Length: 206
Image (cartoon, rainbow, N blue to C red; front, side, top):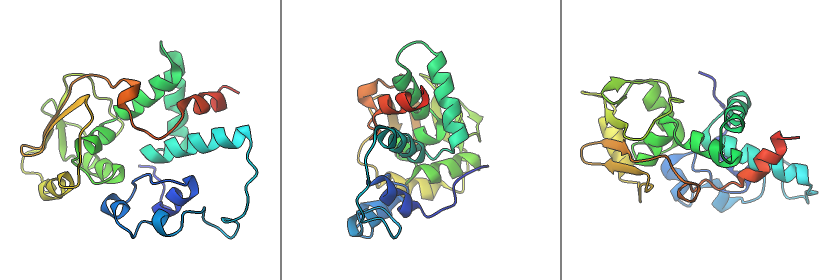
């Protein structure tokens, strides 16, 4: 399972915003962005010459890191989004949002996407009664997500639900029963990902 192993707080500082990669730590004053809001490295406080390409690259990197994907995986999603009907950028975000690991996180069943990915990978969740251990599995409307019977991660999931403020309108979650349902595919205004997807499309369209 390919994944990035570097310091997560360093990634947030590089993008200049909280990407909520460290669960509850991101909600406290220990968050690196709160203490050092400038980019990492010896030239972090220096002046950076802005360019159109740099803006596009930063948006792509921000989105990729937000969802915890490697470059090859992200590029594959873009290719599929470009082939589909509709607006490419919206298609891309919709596909990323409907990954099983992201949906588990959106339900509030995990403190971060990385934790959600691990829980899914270890088989702690079922989709429509069937065990699914593929984080990139694409959920569909009316799919029902439940915890695996007798899962050893139940307390971990319940602890995560205590940190959840709200669940997106396109999802329905029962935190007591630890079940969730996909009501519909998300519209663009229901996706709060802090990126300008049009810049990503411009970058890959070159």
